[in-house]
Length: 234
Image (cartoon, rainbow, N blue to C red; front, side, top):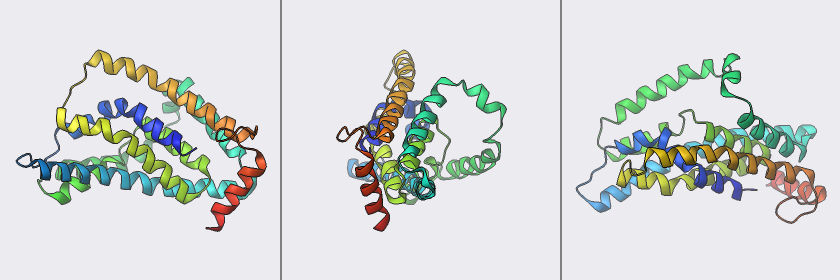
């Protein structure tokens, strides 16, 4: 199921243009040299992907704990259902519970750090902008994290999030080099299509958990058990 991470990142990267595009547009890159600009673009992406991988490691560990507690591949069904519900249920309903309120204090500090490094022109600052950028709240990242939990292995969780970030690289690179090149109307249309992709990926996770014996999509319960036990021994 690792391939779903890259697909989610690739198809959802238009959402990234809207959320993280403003940061990409104003990156303090050294544009006097194409080689330097390319290297600094790499540093920015590496910073983001490193953050995603670290977060994926943590959430993959959570998934492993749930797996060892007896959820096994049924965890995949649960995560798939949650993915679909987050698309169907209006955001304002989630906001009523103020679940993310404590998180906003941390996010405020992250934004402060971003503001400081955006005013500095150095390779270190470019890397750190990408690193802190990865911690900014994003619905698409949350969807990917649900997938990382469903993988039920911390290293696979890190890989899942890394691949998700890798999927966003092409579009974010275009944003860095070409600026705000997509019309607002086109971005709005693509934004509306993203929930459809999230539902499809959620359904794939549900199929995976059902163990229907379909190769690569829904392997049998026995094969999933062997695969997860092997990963746990590594």
